[in-house]
Amino acid sequence: MKPSALIVALAIGLAGYAAAGIPNPATAVALVVLLAIAGAAILHQVEARRIRRLADTINRQLGNNEPASVEFRGGPAWRQLAVAVNSLTAAYRRRGAKLERERPWRRELVDSLVQPALLFSADSRMLSANDAARALLGIPIDAEGLTVVQAVGSAALADGVREARSSARPVTLDVEHGDRDLRAVASRVGDEMLLIIADRTRELRVEEVRRNFVVNASHELKTPVTSIQTLAEALQVTLANDPERAGTLANRLSSEAERLARLVRDLLDLRRLEERGPLERAPVDLAELARRTVADQISRAETREVELTVDAPERAMVAGVPGDLEVIVKNLVGNAVQYNRPGGSVDVTIEPRDGQQVIRVRDTGIGIPQQDLVRIFERFYRVDTARSRATGGTGLGLSIVRHAVERHGGSINVESLLGEGTTFTVSLPIEPPH
Image (cartoon, rainbow, N blue to C red; front, top):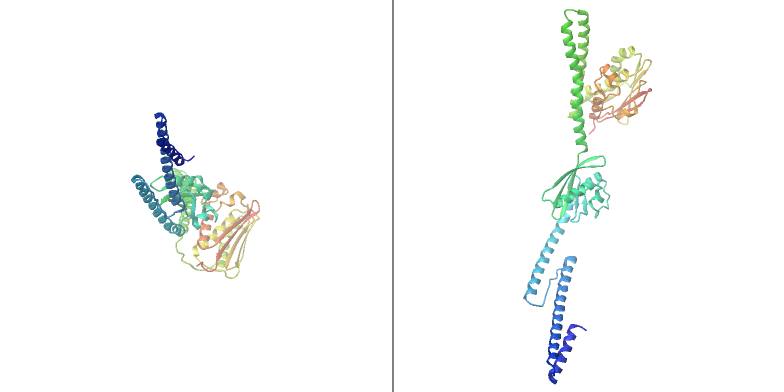
């Protein structure tokens, strides 16, 4: 029986007793107590119904963004509560509407950024990623709604986003993603999180190359300088007492000085080529340049019993820097003669192909081990360190060749078999690249 029906029944019963006269006072007291309990139950039911109605209304407003307001029939306390709830939900709706208006703008901002950028929701679900971020991190097209780890595959980046969410300032972190070195900055944008990423792989590798270059250059310079210093001291001692030995020391001193001069020249050439400034181009006949280089190397080739030939058209014109193109041909032909064997050969060919002049230098020399092929264009890298230094090599020749070729918009490839020979192929555009 409901409390309301119970209290009605008690009231009727109590009225009947009153009309008939209550013979027992204890019975009357019991009826009054029962009536009070029933009344309290009814009041409790009414209050509970009001509270449920309040909760249902708030849930509808929060869940469905309904514009309805809370209304109550009751005392002042209930009316005051209704006003407070209505004010709170109105403020919530205004904030939600503002965020909805700003969301497209934020996504447009992410798409317009040059750097890789991603936008995450308040619960760390991906809302948007620009093309740069998708390309860098391999994010699929349908990644919206995924968590940070699912979207970018990096627990470290997810930790950075979580840290930034609870921080008043942007959070910067360096992470490794596959073979790339990334720097990410996570910051709050309203209730959302913006993650901007910079790929520092090339920057860090260039810095490592520079550090290695300084170390290697110092080492390479130290060797001839030390030799010159030692020979000069010995020459001072023997000059007066042993003229014949003094002459030998003077020749060695001159040789070391020339080696040092070559190293300095190569360093300056490499530095100039790396600056990548505008080229002062002029018409250059590669065929004439190849024939002249071969003529200069004939005597050296005959001494080493190496046959040297050139096969080129009457003219093979390109637009380039004459000195740089001469460095390319001289280095390749000189190396082919230097690292050959008695009875070997060096063939230089030039032919036009697909808008390019193709220079090929093929030798039947000692060849290059496969594991060294990927490194031969590095500065100061030598396949045979002792032999290279003994012949006066600086370890910079092929690095200079590569930079000169690339500076002219060309390409260089190498094929080699150990013990059989090596072929370098250089392709240079006939017309300057636009």
